[in-house]
Amino acid sequence: MIKKILIFILLAVVGYSLVDVFSYIPFGEHRDTVGDFYLQQSPETLKVANTVTSIVVNFRGFDTLGEVTVLFLAALGLSSIMYRRKRKGEKDVRAKKPSSRILQVGAQIIFPLVVVLGAYVFIHGHLTPGGGFQGGAIIATASLLMLITYRKFKVNHNTISWIESIAGVAFVSIGMVGLLKGMSFLENFLPTGELNSLLSGGVIGIIYVAVGFKVAAELTGVIDTVLLNNRPDSNNENN
Amino acid sequence: MTWLIIPIIVLVILTVGAAIYAVVTKNLLYAVVSTGLISLGLSLFFFILQAPDVALTEAAIGVALTTIIFIITIRNTTQYEDEENDNSAVKGGSND
Amino acid sequence: MNQLLTISFYGTAIALILIGLYAVLAKKNLLKIVIGLSIIDGGLHLLFVAIGYLSNGTAPIFSPEVVGQDMPMVDPVPQALVLTAIVIGFAVTAVALSLVIRLYRHHNTASIDQIKNLKW
Image 1 (spheres, rainbow over the protein chains, first blue to last red):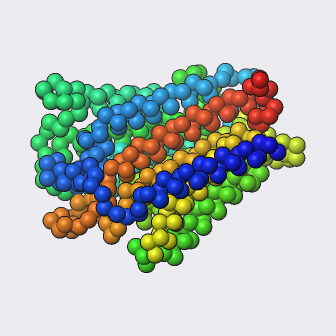
Image 2: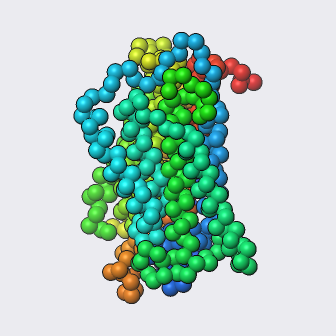
């Protein structure tokens, strides 16, 4: 009983302080922020149409490197925590009955379309809303559909590890090329084309393609590990 | 944006109602589906606030991937919150 | 009218934070606690994006129809921060759930009342 009263008091204090602080920030008013500088620089200097992409990859590109690292560590920690050795008599954990006819036919038709949509989203990340993380998540959802529908759909963990590693190394080495040329890390060293064309923005499009591949491979590996509950490179007999 | 006031009110009721239901209910499967509904409502909020990148990310990650990871956890643990009257088909272990 | 809009956006975000905080503090099942963490994340992201909004502004993308005209655009910096935050929130939720599975396998219960090693 005393615990409920204390929780209520804590919630009231937190709620009151939040309401009080945010009453000083009026909704929808113009303030002079650093966003004005980025909105002016992005179509003129970098020639990139999507301002959020130019902030995430170019102006604040180091934070994106940190985010990619955090995702990698999360995938690593997940697969190492959920590992256990096979006990005797433990069967495959997926469903025993084959899925219905509608699901099988539908998944076969939808899977390549969703993969193409995901690839479109991360290739055109600097022109339309989208980018590497969104496209990678869409491709991971497509492979989840195939894993649920078919028992025999296998994800080759060796291929996924190679794709993920090569994409991560490509991201860092593009940054290092900027460093070797005398400019700062992750600086734009390719010529920027014109606004709203596919080859605009120099290095930004290439970095987002690498991030898209890396996130897609990583999330597919995470989903596969969680569904099948065994370690990627162990010798499992039921696969 | 003032002519969008009725969809905004509906979205507010949907999001807060789904959040309250996710915390109060005892069936964990319903709570997980309600969390997906919260992500959907948030994605529509981001669209109204003129942020299409954020809306895409929240819809792609919050609705599909988070829900599947929660459901795998429910399959490996219990489905109901208080375990005395747990007569569901899912209980412990990882065998079907 | 502006009051009503302010209340609905900020109010929803603060309500989500408080509901998630209640789920973390008062619930006994481990999975409910992780759901509460996920709800707190959602409320925070909405609060961030709502701060950066500009009245009658449009999305910060220079599509071919908008180039050259001087339309007011919303602030793009909070959107870039929230993009990173959503992905990291998902990673944290995934690792927390794998810890829940591990705890269930060891103690055979998912209720924090009965995991007696943590009590002092």
